[in-house]
Length: 300
Length: 191
Image 1 (spheres, one colour):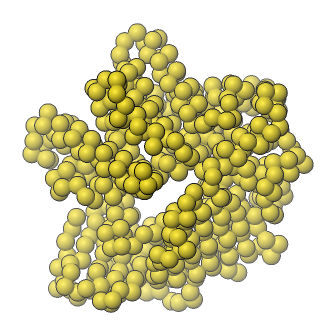
Image 2 (cartoon, chains in turn purple, yellow; image 1 turned 90 degrees about the vertical axis):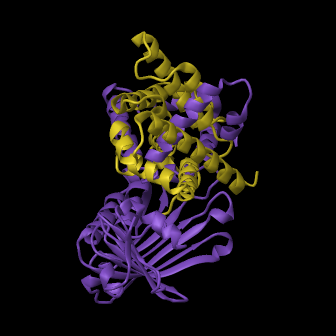
Image 3 (tube, helix red, strand yellow; image 1 turned 135 degrees about the vertical axis):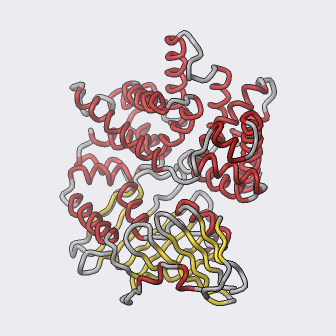
């Protein structure tokens, strides 16, 4: 790893290196709760770039020429391959003029809007990862609007519950001797999930659909019920991340399959949601409904 | 509508569109890491944003200079580095910008031998695990600083330490987290 080699290299002033490590780690720590600000900043900068590009009277093809002259068409192909965006470029270009794009976007936006509505729904969740997808998490996922969720996980000792909303995240262990844990911020969700051996990229439908809206190019089937797509920017040497989403007749999410194929199979994962036509009681989102009143509750 | 794996297939859709889409894809892939680099080099978030946007505009104008055999992220950070140094020279003082030798070290820290696209996510995943393994007092300090937003004297008061002792504690914690993260990433890569 180049970064570590650099850290150990001789000759660099220790103070400069130490300050760089301090600053670099500080920036990473700022991002442990999420990278939304970076993604927003990237989009803002791209908007500024588009304005600059369009406002300068620059021909759309202007930047192509230097590359093509210097490296030829094959260089562009290599460039696309190296960036891992070959598929994304093709799809993006097609969608820029393709008649299906607005419909796909509208369908996804509609599903997102319905997911954001505070109508409780239940999904069966399956998350598999690793070589041969052998490490799996199966759970019932209850969602209500944005960021309100409850996960029911079957454990040898019974059912464990993990849930949360904008303000709080909570864990009710299956073992009744263990205390209920309350986290002060929703952003600690992933930490509490990890502590309970639950590894999930998403714990609510809105986050998953938002990721698809931002990072993926989507196509809509002729019947308007199936969306499929590929991640817009995928790392080099990675296969493109893909998803397949089925809408119900109301335009809400009926099922979702999201798959990531990494550089090595150990990093692969597949995330699936399947809606169940079950009436959801709002109390499922309250941790107190999952444990006895006298059970010890600790806050972290 | 199915994506076609060959870029030539986009010709019907307008070949002039491809470089724009490609540039956007590259920026989306490498932009977050450039933001980390800039954030580490420049404390002022407004200047960070300015430099980020400026770097993209320069990159676009000079895209013909980019060697597609090399890393786009590395090239982009090189542009940002030059912008920082130019601004530092123009300011004629240290100001809020990092010293050149630290800037060089930051550039080295951002380098990755393999694919850059998901590196930041891998680092953050490793860092989160390392956070869980911190002693209680250190983890508490990190939480107060990064989650709850307490800084300086306010953070020191909450930790029951002097401002200087708090600063030293945070420095030690960050160094420890960096070492832990690096070891985890190396172990993951089988080094």
